[in-house]
Amino acid sequence: MARLLAIDYGKKRTGLAVTDELQIIANGLTTVATATLVDFILDYVKREPVERIIVGMPKQMNNEPSENMCRIRPFVGRLRNLLPEIPVEYHDERFTSVLAHQAILASGIGKMARRNKELVDEVSATIILQSYMESRRMQGQNKPI
Image (cartoon, rainbow, N blue to C red; front, side):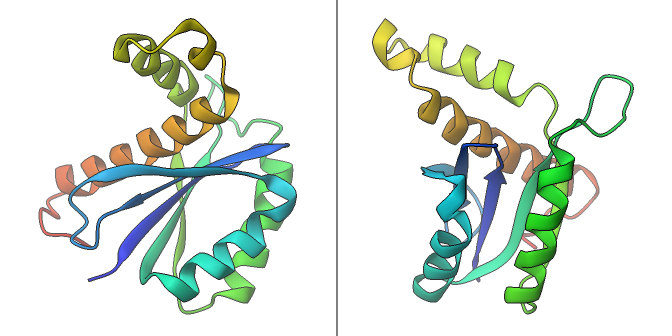
């Protein structure tokens, strides 16, 4: 089996998370400058088997896409062209930043570390991935993808 890779795409920084190869546990991978994101992903998929890429889809409360979608759509299109063998899916990312801040606060790490925006992006990607995995299970797909 191969990993799932989740992306919390940001204008400046992008958080990444991956599963283990059995697709049981979601873990933060890193945060990279968005300008280098495609190169990072291409390098990563050469080193690690990736079955599917999940991209956080930012939505407003009224279910309309947020303004960041104008940057995410071209990125996803480019990814699909460069990696046609790996499916790329969107997954709702509403509230992931809030949940990431809450998780970081609950973890008990120090105040300065909690201000680290890169950590928030990585935790957000992890939450997107965990949410994606849980939604697949709830849809009756208990086995990994």
